[in-house]
Amino acid sequence: MSAYAGGEGPQGEQGPPGLDERPVTWTFDPLVDGVTGDAQAFWFVPAHMDGWVLTSAEAGLDTPGTGATTIQIRNVTQAADMLSTRIGIDTGEAHSKTGTAAVIDAANDDIAWGDKIVVDIDAFPTNGRGLQVHAIFSAP
Image (cartoon, rainbow, N blue to C red; front, side, top):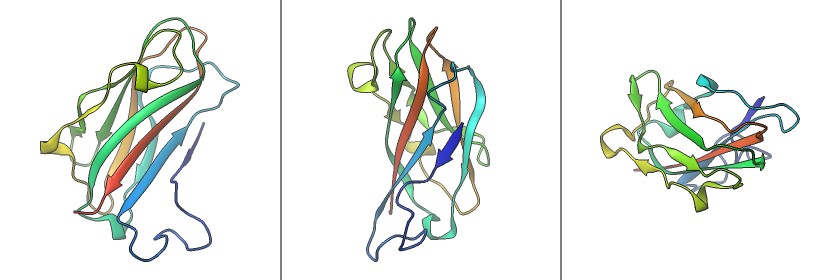
């Protein structure tokens, strides 16, 4: 499993000037069957994103399996689930766009510098592989 905070590169972690959205992507090994459990991936909020909010979340599978996939994004530091409706990928499908759309919990969508954000995998399909969870955080 590897986690990658998108948007990093030659400009550094802050990205180009004026960037008011930041994608964060957690990518799991496509050669290994997925597992369920809390905190399967994590990310710490950098200083420049203090006060930002979660505005979008979705997921996909490189290899869909049998059974549904259910995912929660959780702020460990604030002890809060960030989604009131978890991301859902239907059995045999590759992306959440055809499943249950995530609903952001407006009371728990904010992040602060140093917060630990994790991916909880509550359900995973048999023979499913290569999960990718994608979240967008936006400046207030």
